[in-house]
Image (tube, rainbow, N blue to C red; front, side, top):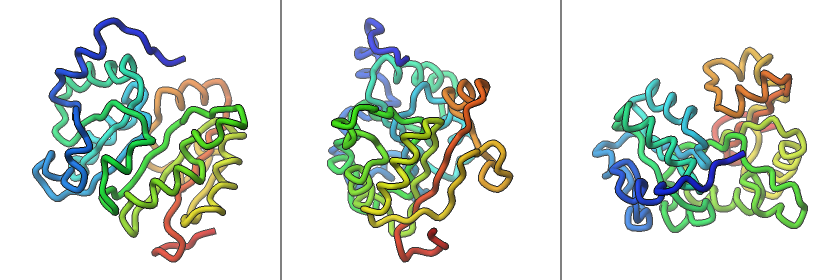
Length: 220
């Protein structure tokens, strides 16, 4: 369960040098934050930050932006970032619905969706991060040869996500229903906190990678 009510978390976030307070002012110029021309990778829903922080440590040639909706969860990321001081990692606190006001067309090179909220009620389907509605948002901000990676242990959500790609401009280039036993797709895999927890319980991890239809690769 997500932590949502740690007293003072919003004040810490508002004063953190690692959080962009007005992301809309950087639309089209995010590389200026990092002062280089490296690719921009975006994780939507960072959780406590294990995935994106390890990625940033292992890939200093890439700049990472983490979006987290809940202040008390983002606070955990910032506590780790204060220790690590990763210069290629910054955060935004906000709702992913706003990404098209924060990022310009084609500005992001890769998007990560890790163990997203399944929003199990059908009336909330449009809120699911791998939904066709969100894929249209990603289509705008993603570079022409950009990729979307999605992982979850929720088979129902994953089946929904696979079906939603048919209504999008994206095609599946790689897919597995048992990531940790897939030697190809599991190579270099970095686990999130939820991934480690659920896989220890015996849950199989599903993953797909999307690219635009017609882009370099072999969509299936």
